[in-house]
Length: 156
Image (cartoon, rainbow, N blue to C red; front, side, top):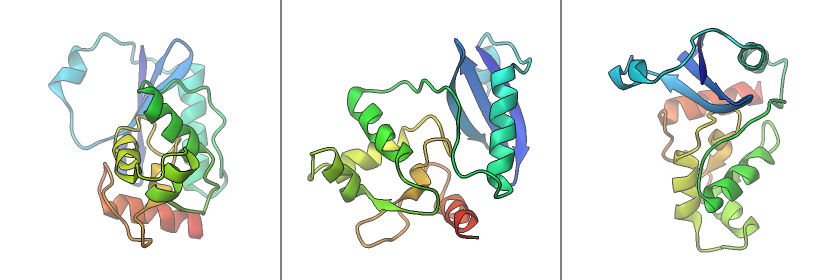
C-alpha cells in the first residue's frame, strides 16, 4: 500500500494506492493513530503523482473527468451505485431516487444514500453530484459546505 497526502482548498487529501489502483481518496481533518499503524510506503508512486496532478487540474477547472485505475472495495450494490456516480457528467446532478431507478430499484433511495456515504473515492466518484428528491443538499461525508463548494466549482 502506498499513501500520498496533498494539500487542497479543502484541507489535506489522502490518496491510497494498492496493487496499481487507487483505492481511497479521503479528506483528512486530523491525524489518526490507527492510520499511522497501517504498514504502508509513504513514497509517491507514478499513479499517486498522476492522481495528484488530475485533482489539481480539477480544482483549477482544467479537468472534468478523471482517468485513473480505481479499485474501490464495497458490496455489489455499492459498486453498482458507484458505477452510476461515475456516469454523472461534470456540472450535472442526479437525485438519490434517480440513481435508485437507474439501478432498477426505485424504492432504494436511502440505500443509494448509504452507498454514497461509503464511497471511498471522494471526488473521483462524484457523490457530491447527488441531491435529495427536491434538489436539496443532503448529508455528505465531509459536510454539506464541502458538497456545495464542489458543486459551485463545477458551475464556474
